[in-house]
View (cartoon, rainbow, N blue to C red):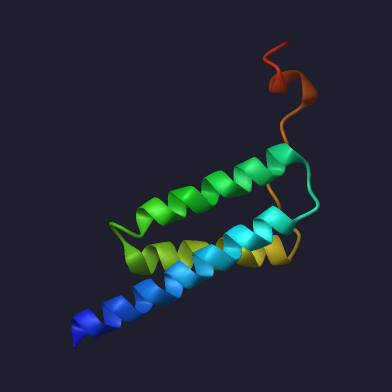
Length: 84
């Protein structure tokens, strides 16, 4: 029984991750912000292998922040090309 619940959670998280990636791709934000969000999604994806419930909670929080417009700050222009 426990295994069935884990598989159902995995399916739900996988579908939500897919939707989250689509949402991030569709955002009208600077590219460095999109990259930061994508990195966060990839970290959450990796976390599903070790802590599925924790990864689901992290995904919930991240998407709540995105929906509320709380996005990671972009890097200052000088940091993009490595110049001071």
